[in-house]
Amino acid sequence: MLKATNFLIFFLTISSCSKNEIAPVSTPSNTNQSAVKFILKVEAGTGGKVDISEGTFDKGTEVVIRAIPNNYFNFSGWNNGKSENPLKLLMDKDISLKAEFGKQDLNFVFNYSEFTEPQLPLSTEGLGYLKINNLAYLIMPFADLKNTKSDFLRIFQFDEKNNKLTDKTKTTFNSISEVGFPKSPLFMEDFNKDGYTDIFLVDHGQENRLINGRWEGGYLIMYYGSANGFVKQNFPGITDKKLFYHHADVGDYDNDGDLDIISQRWSSATERVASDNTVSILKNNQGKFEIINLEKPLDSVGSVLFTNLDDDPYLEVLCATYRNDQGSLWSWDPMANTTNVVNSKMGPYEIHDIIEISNAKGKRILLFPEDYQGTKTPILSTTDNGKSISNASDMFDFQGRDMIVKDFNGDGLEDVFTYYGNDGEWTSSSYGPLTKSIYLNTGNNTFTNPIEVKDIFSKDFTNYVGKLFYPLEPTPEGFKFLRFEEFWPSPFPKLAEIVILKFK
Image (tube, rainbow, N blue to C red; front, top):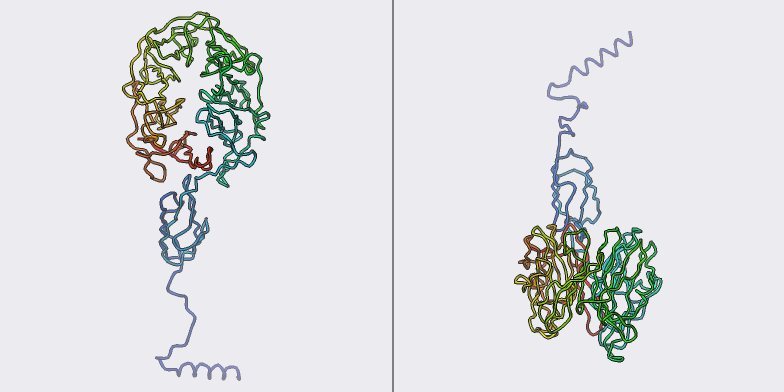
C-alpha cells in the first residue's frame, strides 16, 4: 500500500507542471559532423610541383601534402610560414596554400688542397668530363705552350653537397703525368672493354727551346679506368716516345670490335719518324696496343680523321697538311697499306682540326685552319670525302681550338661547339656572343646559330659575352655546361658555375 501511495504522489507532481515548462532531456544534435566538408587548394610556385593541387575533405580529416622541387631547385617553404615537407594539415576550415621554391646554388669553388695550386693557366685543350661509379669528375690540364714549367694532368671530383670541385689527382691517378701542352681533344672511351671509361691525351710538348732545329716534344698519355681510379698504361713505342704530336682520332678501322687510334707525329729533338712528319696506327688488340707506322707519307700532316672513303666496310685515314703554301688532302688505307692523294688544291691552310658530321643527307667533313692573326681564315667543308672543298657559308670565324661534337638541343642530330670564343680578330678581353660558338645541325648538311639561349632559371644568354664554357652532359631540362669564372689575378680558375642551357 505504501508503494502505491508514493507512485500516486509522484504522478500528481508531474501532472501539475505548467504546459509551458518542458523538462530538460538529452537529445541528439541535428548537425551531422561527417556532412561538413572543407576545400583545400595547393599551388606550386616556379621551380616545382605539389602532389595534391586541390580537394574537398570531411571536417577533422588529416591531409598530408608534399612539395616536389624540380631539378636544380630547392623547396624553401609554404606561404603560411611552415617549412615542414611533407606538411600535415587538419581540415577544420577552407585552406589555400602555396609551395615556394628557390634556385639551387650551382656555383662550385675549386679546392686545390690535395696539390699545390697550379703554376700555369688552364689549357682549354684536353678538358674532359666523365663519371665513375656515379661520381662526376672534371679532368683539367694546366699548361702553357711557351713556358719552361710543367704542371700535372689533374682530376677534380664534383662535390654537389658542398658545392666544391675537389682536387683528387693524387688519390685517383696511380701515377701522375706532367703535361707540357695538350693537343687534340681528350678521348674518353672504354679501350679495354672492362666497363670503365679510359682516357687518352696527346701531349704536344712546349715550344720554348729548339734543339738541333726541333722542339723537345711530349708524350702520348693513356690511363685505364677502374673501380678505384685510373691506372697509367705504358705501351712500348707508343707512350714512351717523346715526339712532337699535334692531332689524333679514334675509331675501329679494322672492324675487330676494338677501338684503335690514329696519331699524327713529327720528329722531336730526341726522336725521329719517317719523313720527319707522318701518321701511325695505334692498333688495339683487346686492350693491348701496338704501333703500325706509315713509312712513306704522301705529304705533311696537321690533322687526321678516321673515315670511310670507299665502298668497303673498313675505315681509312684522311690526312690534312699543315702548310702555309698549297696544301693537300691525302689518305692512307691501313688495311690495303696504300696511300692516295684526295685533293691536291686544298689551299694555303695549316689545318688544326677535322671533324665529321652525319645527318639525313649523308656526311659532311669540316676542316678548321689555324687563325692566330685574325685573317678571317675560312672553315673548309666537303660532302664528297674531300674531292671538292669549299668555304663553309654557314660556319664562320674559327673561334675554337678543338671542336666538340654533341647533340646540344636534343633533336638527335650532331651539333658543333667551338668552346673557346676568342681569336686574333678580337682584343684579349673580348670573347664574342655565346650563340656564335654554337652551330646547330639542321639535318640537311647545314648548320645555323641558335636565335635564343636561356638557362632553366630563364636567364637570357642569347647575347652573353663571357669566359670559357665547357659542355658536360645532356639533361632532361637542357644541356649542362660548366662556366668558368675568376681566372684573374690567378692563372687558374677559382670558381665555376653549372649552367643548364636550352637552345632554340
